[in-house]
Length: 186
Ligand code: SF4
Image (cartoon, rainbow, N blue to C red):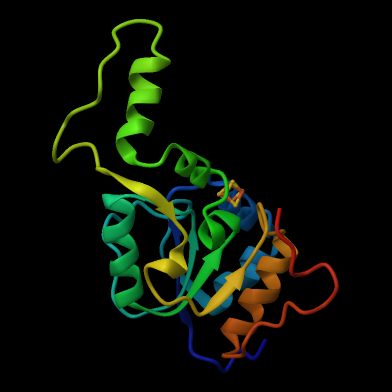
């Protein structure tokens, strides 16, 4: 990578996912040191305690589907403040595991199944307006709510594929995942 390029502002975002995609990001291991020479991580659950998504982010890796009102609000903030939004992993791309609840057809049946039907004791629906984000009726993939610039499939995407994407974006190139095995779900 050219050292002459200006430093990028990089974010990673955790919506409704298991954090496995972020674990794969950490699997970049020593390449993270090289990444740190070219980018500042300005928002990430694995790198800082930053609560507010900052402005003027160059690249955001967004893990997870959109399952509740907090996810939705954060995603809109991310899109408004990010140049290149990467749909990061299968949950972001097609809702995947969190989307399995969609077969119950709505937030209310999901809550009733989890907190009433399957309760061992003290069956009670959670109710704390303003504290507990409202579930959306369906878990949605990121691209159904905001425009996506790059898709990075996998559950999780391998560290090698994450590196392929980041190396290109750091050099203002479009990532090419067309090599055999690099576009793969699951
Ligand atoms: S794509 Fe897989 S590894 Fe990534 S958040 Fe979803 S379930 Fe976890």
